[in-house]
Length: 246
Image (cartoon, rainbow, N blue to C red):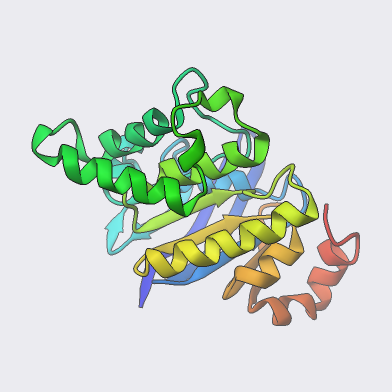
């Protein structure tokens, strides 16, 4: 059953079509990949889903609720969380405080839930291997741990839909393999969650994604399993044939 449906989605910046007549359907409890070269429109897509931009045309439906025209905070409360290609942590807050911000955005400040919220923070710290850095400022963490913290903070909002914008950006091959294992574990522990990720690292896409959309100049040129899109002539020409990672 579908959680997210995108139909006829178009977005223009002036006379430039950043997204053109895009169709995507994401089933519940899957990991869905969006790949394509820089400038293909991938991050613009996330900005449209999360209400940062309002589309020029088209529909974005989450669990039968239209997201078009809704402010970002309302979309978050409907169960959408995201990370960013460029980290957006609170560098002067410690690890626990950063995760707690995610909880507050979802639940508000409720003293009656303090113990439950504290327990969930502890669970996230353990899952992401951040327990020994819990009281360290986010800005002082190694880059790979900052990436993990941003995902942990997003999960603290208890989303239905988690959008990951290039979670492996800046990571070395060993760190990428570790991230694949971590996201697989997230999927096990948060069994109802649906993940959509933007990524250039094909090993991560191959290791995680049930389905993939390949974008080129704002359009979807292929949809299917990783194996199907890798053998698609349009994809080979536009993306995979240029280089494995762009």
